[in-house]
Length: 226
Image 1 (cartoon, rainbow, N blue to C red):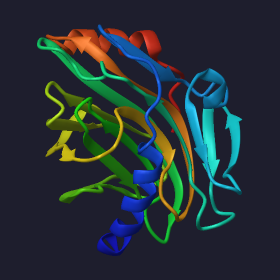
Image 2: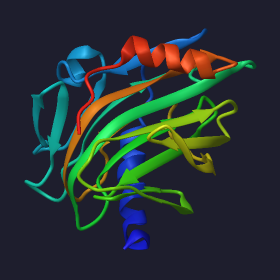
Image 3: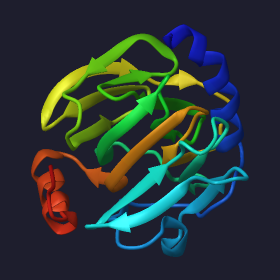
């Protein structure tokens, strides 16, 4: 099932990530979507097929429902013209809180990041697991039907640690790509799904990172849901 999806995901994600736009960053920064409005109204670049997914806001979350048609793709991106990567003594952090209500017959919701020199990570979600699109050995199960907190951390945009509900779940590597520098999230491949996004946040923070990550989380935290 996973292998059969990869060629479809490669083509779709390449289209989504291949457009270069956006602003440069030259110092620590932070972007956050908190489920208060549609993402494109808060500066995120929307990519949507025709027809697009059904969307609605509820209890501080964005629902994306792509069950209307298999080819539907609907996602949101911040693009960079250099400056996405951490400098020495800094760390790139990307975190999101997601409940996958349904994903069939394959993975559908996802998140992605590409560095300034085009190294990428793409995570896709099924109903009760995560996989890394370009890392065949990366497969992370989680309890279905609940919100889960995910966080990627990297200080070199070559290697990363992925945290699930505050615990280190796995370590992986970025792959060499041709994508533009960016970070984003949403419905990224052609399948059926209903996903509820509580938040998506990313940026660069100084190291040592532990207390700073906690501070940023306190500043950005929304109401938790199950």
